[in-house]
Image 1 (cartoon, rainbow, N blue to C red):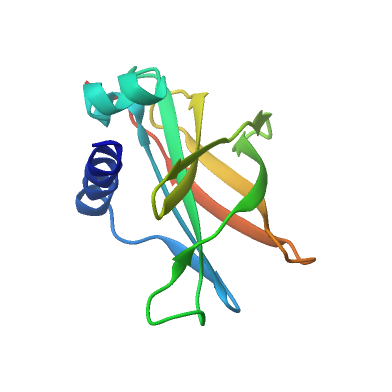
Image 2 (cartoon, helix red, strand yellow):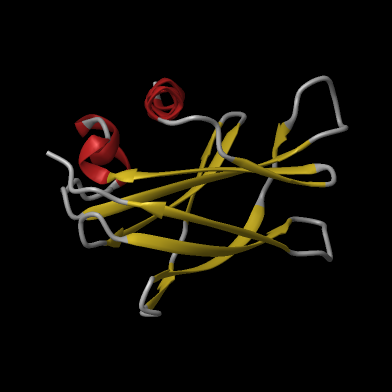
Length: 144
């Protein structure tokens, strides 16, 4: 049941936005940001995610390729910050969610509508001595 709910969460993300990922050798980091009010009520409740038109939701997953036919969900340490265009910065705290073969990390944060935010996330895959810098910008809009 939990896997089905997580799958629904990922499907919402897939239909709402184009695929966003960065590739670092054998690792892929997939990410998506949206307003938490867009999350399904039951999914948000299950994971303790606050739903609000002023709270952003960032979801990341790390996959390792080259092990089998399909990429494999991979554990990692994530540290990150977000900043607005005038340089105000906030540290992000990530929650790890493991379900059967799915593994992902999420963070929530307050935002001002229509502001552009820069994200810088340091990803260190388990078993790797290297860290990868995932950087992207995204504008957030107040949800309904």
